[in-house]
Image 1 (cartoon, rainbow, N blue to C red):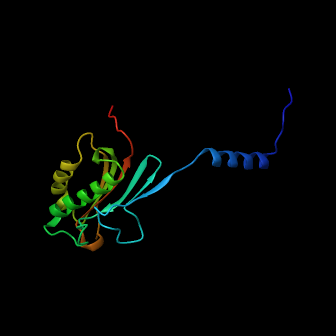
Image 2 (cartoon, one colour; image 1 turned 90 degrees about the vertical axis):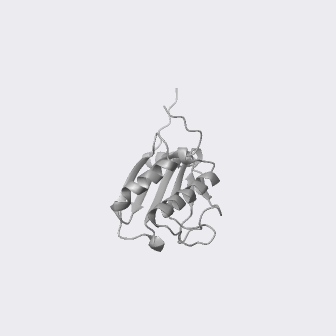
Image 3 (cartoon, rainbow, N blue to C red; image 1 turned 60 degrees about the vertical axis):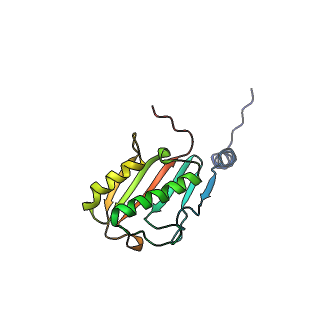
Length: 156
């Protein structure tokens, strides 16, 4: 049996070429008019293969572009509806969400936000982090960003 010896540099180049041809990463930008347009240089969501990365959502009315009135409760509901619209545009629901990050301007709103959050996310809940921050865009009191798994979710 004959064997071929390939020098390290050539082998590495061949290996990179083979891997780049075999592995394809698909990226899709998700956008819907049912949620507010981005207010900066970002998109509503990006899908990479079977993972959906959702940008931060605040309580903006998608039609007017203005913050909803009514305090943290109204903002939380609107932000979660905005998040839901982007999920829907990608073929997902709140059940597909596996991780969220919640930003509050004061932790004194934590209990109010948790109660509303539980209206949208059901058990098993996504993993979550919650932070108090000095300020949010447009003077928002609440912001949420999320990561979702695209596809039929089966809990085990």
